[in-house]
Length: 179
Image (cartoon, rainbow, N blue to C red; front, side, top):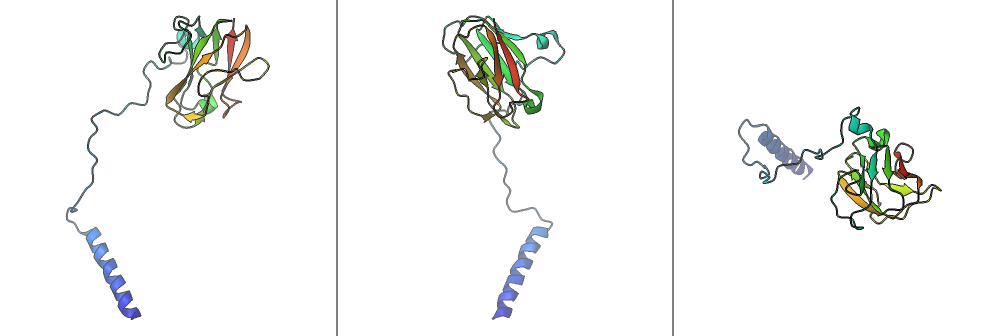
């Protein structure tokens, strides 16, 4: 009985190996249907400027908020009432882009966290001068990019505030000057 079982197992193995090594074309193939929508490049449009350019060294700033509630759009700088802080690929060691930003004192503004790093999770929290967290409106949980989160920041008194990734607090530490 054992010999018959061993013989059948060996025969089945030979048939399988012979089928895999024949020179003929396979009787079936699998190819997914082509996508109707082209795949994205992975690079965000309007990405930050190259290091060393005049725009790269200027701090981001925010002016008065246009409406008081986030709109999901908006640029960087005073006219949109928003500050964009980015975590580029490798931000865990390279830090934030930009590392410093400015906002108007006593004025609500939008803070946009543009997480472009698909290699590690990040989050962005804003800290008061005493080290406590600023109570912003929005989801401050860790996430791996690419993706954006938008926060509504309440009016802040003049001073120096830190923006920090809680996953990488020693390398992803920026300064927000509220004037």
